[in-house]
Image 1 (cartoon, rainbow, N blue to C red):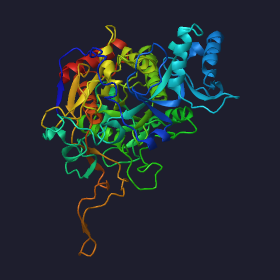
Image 2 (image 1 turned 180 degrees about the horizontal axis):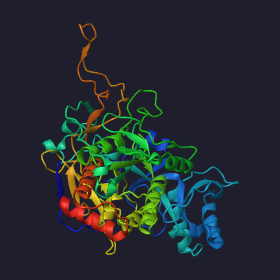
Image 3 (image 1 turned 45 degrees about the vertical axis):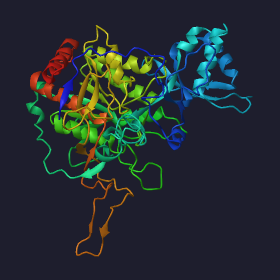
Image 4 (image 1 turned 30 degrees about the vertical axis):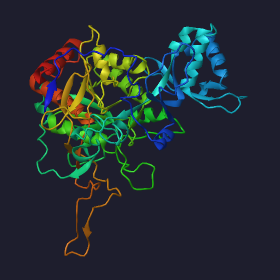
Length: 528
């Protein structure tokens, strides 16, 4: 598995008002948008207040906003907010506020007012109404600064919402060159079942680990199956030395943040191949978290994965639930740095999803940046997939690699994808904010064994002496698959860092200087 650092200081591209503001964003089907109560913010169709600049394209929850706790504690500002929203017949349902997440934002539902005429509930329109109220002197600018969209993030596997549409092409129109091939054809096919002849690398006992512990990689994704031939799984509270641990208590907390009218994530398991359809198709991102855990198992067998399920099996992640999970990890790390021996922080976080921000300059801020800043300030590096849109448009959280502060002891690392021959994969995002490229195309890793969809072999002969058929494209009983995407480049880097920590450092110290030294030593070992 190849790993190449760019050797350049990460930076964001200069804003260009002439650029296409819709590139580099996911394309969700109408069914997916309806399922997750989401809308696409199309720059050419976005309602704008007087004086507002055309936004970049993004995807957001239309019935949700994120409200700062300062806004909720200020009666005067709440009155301004209510007045601005009443123009559209809407109100914030304060009886269904979510718990505080970093940096102390609450998820809030938008509903029609008691005497409203029929109206469309739309968080973007609410924000534009606030812009108009601020410009007209009817609302404090602080109100607008304390209210944000809740974004929809997507997984970065080369399939479904996390990549280019099947009809998107690269190359000059009509050129007839190989670059004009569809991304989902040929070498860039989606998942396919394979079998693995080589055994997984041997895992050494815990007693041989430096400092008596293993480096822990938090993987926020679709979760893992209850069992798999490649690794053992246990509950985190059991304190067992398995390769993967899950945390049902945290999953229960995330479920409590859910929308009762949207799909919920109520357990840590990656075990529902078809979602809520009756067609028998395997969902686009089912097995995504298992595949990532399997890559780390191959690269760093002596590490441990902490699997936290935040992604639906169609590749969608709600920003609020992602923030809740990351804030939990940040709080654990902060307690450990303060000397709390009961805290058991992770050593790094691996995120294989993201979104494009609506900010006209493509400069994201808000809750996601704040909580990732908390992690890096506490010595926890965050490794992120760069996205699969063949674009230089910043894809967050990966593009936070360009916003590092001088006092941050460890970095955010953004990872693009390489082909097996070392060239950059055609689908991979790039640009000055990408810090590293790792193998991410045609990867082989673990996959849940219970996936057997309705796609069928091209030929079958049930009358032969022994039943025979051509390859069944979505029968994964072998427990392994081949798949592509920057989703799978990120865990290559995370695994390399974990392996370097074991080889080069003592894992015992949890004070910030020890943790920072451990990360910086591992980064030098892998070539950063």
